[in-house]
Structures are given as structure tokens and as C-alpha cells.
Image (tube, rainbow, N blue to C red; front, side):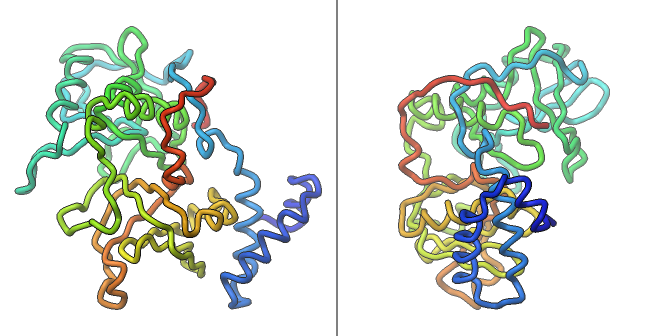
Length: 313
């Protein structure tokens, strides 16, 4: 929780900007019980609004000067998961590759190619270097790490720039997020791999079989804020949820500026559990970081200046 005094000191008197943010939140959230929630939202978002991951720079190196650990590869499970010789499994941070066939679901496009690409980069017995995330394990007990080949190549970056993966930012493991988004953009502009055809799903065309990781575009029609988070409606078909534990990363003013605009959102698509109460929002996606929600116009193919990767983990 950010106190008023702490906020004023941290922002060096940027009080007018916060008042505008508070007024906006007050209009969207008329219940006075949540005014403190609005104030905290504004204070936190102002402190992080200019972070590299929310305004990704085009860095093409994704390198580091040191590693947390070195290990040996036993085998590659799929495009974003591998097993080490000591039995530990590693999930590559910051990317998501198409899913292989399982549970009576066919393989997604380029799933086999992504797996082959990773196998080519790190064969059984190969040495790899690991840079762990701030959260070191996921709920499957896999290690979360940025993985580098023996000669220092960032494997996530290689998969992204060749069109075998899409970038995803999940706090607190946000290191290299700007770099990875830049690599994805290079692949998209070169129409490499999964970007050979338009892989953006239109919100109005979502079907039950589309659940899983998706990049979706549509019109942001309205926003609602309550004590359970920020809720966005896209084309009356998709609800986007930002829960309280991630709200401090978002700027409500920036989201409001996107209303009635074409936006692109990325994450794991699910059938909305509350669809019986609201037939217009049949699907749900939770987002955890501002990089997951952008104006569709920002997906342009103009390459800008390069910068160094963010090492925030």
C-alpha cells in the first residue's frame, strides 16, 4: 500500500496528474468504499509507467555477462521446455511456443517445428547456462529460467526471431521482456514461422476450440473497476481481467485512452465461467502485465533504435 506522503515524495509533487487519475477512477467506480483502492492504483501505476517492458525498445541481443548456473541437457520436451541431466525440468521464461498434440487435441501450427528448432540448438549432452527468474519455479515445479547455449546465445530470442514462439510477460519474471517483444516483432515483420500467415484472432470470431494461448484483436468497448480488479470488454465477446495483485503495474489513464480503439491482447484464453450471467462475454483472459495489452496500431513493422535488455529480475 502506498501512503499519500510516500506518493507525493516519490513523484516529486506530481499531484495534479494523480488528481486527474483519481477523478477518472472515481467516475468509473462510484462506490466510495473503493476510493482508497483507486488512489493506490494511480500511485503505483505512476511509479512504473515508464518501465522498459511497458514501452518495449528494439534490442536484438538479449545477452548477459554472467549466469546463475550451468547444466547439461538430457532432452527437449517441446519448444519451450527441456529436461536437464540431473532430472530437473526447465520452462523457458518469456515465451510461449505452439502446443504439441495431447489429450485428443491436435498439434498447433508450428508446434513440431518449434520443438525441432530447440532440439537443433541444444542436443542431448549439450551445455546450457541458466539465468533464473525472480520466481524460480512454476506450479508444475519446473525451473523458470532464461536459457543460453554454450556459446552464449539466448535460446528464447532465437526462437522468437525465427517465428517459433510468441512473447509473454508474467511478473515478477520480467527481465528481457522488451528484448523478447522486439525479437517477436522482427519475426512478425519478416513473416517468419507462425507469422507467415496472420496469427491474430479476431475477438468476434472466437470459438470454443480456440482456448489456449492466443493473440486477439478487437474493439475495447468498456472498462469497469471494482474491488476484484479491472475488467475490460472487447467486442462483447471477450472479458479481460486484471486482478488486484497485478493492478499496480497498469496505468488506468492509458487503458481509458484505448476505449473505442482497436487493441491487441495476448494471454491464455478460457471459456468464461460466468457466461450464463452475461451471454455477451463468453470468453475470459487474465492479463498480468501492460505488455499484454496494446493498441493494434502499435504492431507496426518499423524498426526503431536498439537498446540494452532490461535485467529487472
